[in-house]
Length: 356
Ligand SMILES: Nc1ncnc2c1ncn2[C@@H]1O[C@H](COP(=O)(O)OP(=O)(O)OP(=O)(O)O)[C@@H](O)[C@H]1O
Image 1 (cartoon, helix red, strand yellow):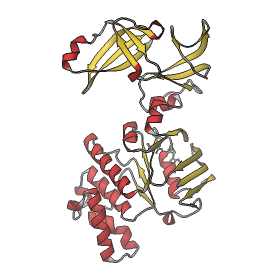
Image 2 (cartoon, protein in one colour; image 1 turned 45 degrees about the horizontal axis):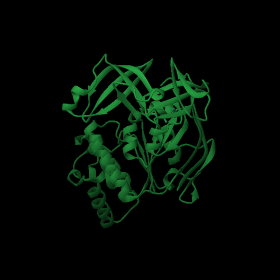
Image 3 (spheres, helix red, strand yellow; image 1 turned 60 degrees about the vertical axis):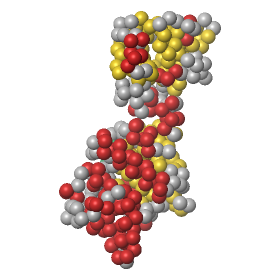
Image 4 (cartoon, protein in one colour; image 1 turned 90 degrees about the vertical axis):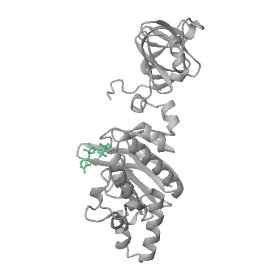
């Protein structure tokens, strides 16, 4: 178990603020946040590269707040791989074990195991300058893993990879983490990557952790406008909860959507697309709203229909295949949009001026 309690670190122009976090043994934990939000500084605090201003860090049953980096048994993989260019892959991977003066036969045994796990045996005699980005990243990971760290910190290890290589590396990484069970903290600004890899995610914004939860919890129930928008939730809007004709409604533009929420006043809300139904004629007047189709795009497995309802641009995926295309409305058509029960999620709006 890793525990951070009230961790604070001020740097010129940046403040890592009041970080409280618990990560379970064997967990794959992702810190998700935009550039400059403090993800790397947080990893560096864990690795012992900064002296904390306040707060404590505990790992595997002992306090490590003041332990020097080399005694923390942490593996750190950087964004830019940081391989030694004058050493071949084998020498790069074994560098740390040689410094530890591990006997050659033990080094060899570890090398074989790690390279098998990451599929890099054919690369052992090559030099970093001759490797692709994805290959270099695997080597960097192997170099960290061979030291058998108790915790692995990965600082945007895929930022320089093309989408296909990134997808492959994500699979390798996830399998490796499940096989080894090393508590892993991975930093990224990409929600899809986070959702694929993470057991749990913490959303970071301006030096603070805004929300922690499983990928599904964060995607379905974002706690703030920032979390909703940054994780790419479609149909994120703002409005005001008030009473209208004796009912609780949310007013947004000229629309009044019936709601049941403990919140009042200004709120943010998500209209989950899978709870939106596209109709030619209204079914249930209280939850059906007239709109106009703005665009229909074909995606791989579904159609993406954009409907303007009052001032809201609603994104709606509609399942279908080519033969189904003719039954879909087209741009300019008048339609109705029905909100099914459970389709609305609210969060308090603390800072309406958040600009992503
Ligand atoms: N040693 C330092 N001294 C002063 N400021 C620093 C230092 N290291 C980082 N910062 C600042 O702290 C803020 C957070 O930096 P950090 O590298 O943690 O962001 P990040 O979330 O990892 O961003 P990115 O996704 O771009 O890597 C930035 O404004 C950065 O300029």
